[in-house]
Amino acid sequence: MWRQQFRNGRRALRRHRNRQALQLLTAAVAECPASERSELAAALRALGFACARLGRRDAALRCWVDAQRTRKQAPLARLIRRCSNDYGMPRQHHRILDDWRAFHSLQLSRYVDAGGRLPLGPAESDMLRDLLWGHFTALLRGGVLDGLSAEQRRELFMNLQIPFPLLRLPSEPPGTAIAVDFVRGRRPSPADPCLCGSALPYVVCCGRIPTSGEIAIGC
Image (cartoon, rainbow, N blue to C red):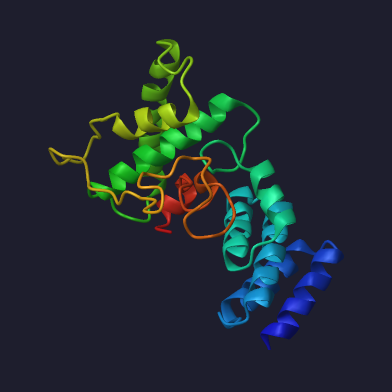
């Protein structure tokens, strides 16, 4: 059944019936056995293109990364690098927008880790966005980000403590798992090959920052 859905999904994609392709390819990915690695990778890759055509760039990049993890493909790896920014998120039209999305996502993760409920309601999402935008623009006006590398900006965003309303944050930030490259005996740098063996840079694979949309729905 899933093979037929995959074939029909690719046919719909070639004919630019993108919503139909999205439904068929989503079903094919869900039903494809994990043992069929080549077919699963191909279905994920096609699903990514369907998402991209519908303007769902976050979902498209996530599908392509999952496809690359399932089966390494040099052309797909090049596509992922081209579409990703320094945080492993979909590339925006300006670096400031890349910084803003990374800042928003990292702080939203802190909010959720500290007790925020998922999924976020519209009013709660708007309140958080306005609060975080105020702090982010203060960093820009103060020139704090000038001259920093992407890795340094990421560390700054992660370490910035914002007092969220409606929520009492713990005295210590929530613990996070730290990736370690035991072969090299150090934490992986953004440009290192990912530890999972996908042949992608760590920053666009297992080290990427989840988008705010993923965090908001609990992905």
